[in-house]
Image (tube, rainbow, N blue to C red; front, side):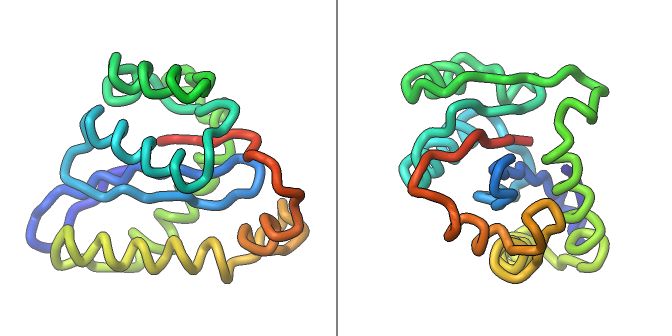
Length: 159
């Protein structure tokens, strides 16, 4: 997702959500997100949450780079790319991104990229801990996770 700060800095946001629990694991905010940052963020998330069975993403250059594929293979993570222009193949992330756009990006006026990182992280925490979801029987993602047995996530979505 893209936005722009008041100081004209471009904001690119890479969102990572769990399709099953709807938890947003990460929203990486930068001016550009290249494959090195994708690999770094994936490594951080795997160390925190464990490796998902699969990772669904578009087939943008930053997601199909050799280094990204190597890291996924090392962690036995299957890829599930969706076709360009086919949002129905990525419903969980499209739904999340719509909420993120409506409830955060459209409601805030970021003075800088650093301010955007802070505000977006506060929104992400609120989304996970305070915002109930109809698809989770009106539980928050955090409440839903606490009711699950200690098992690995079904899959993550990277966008």
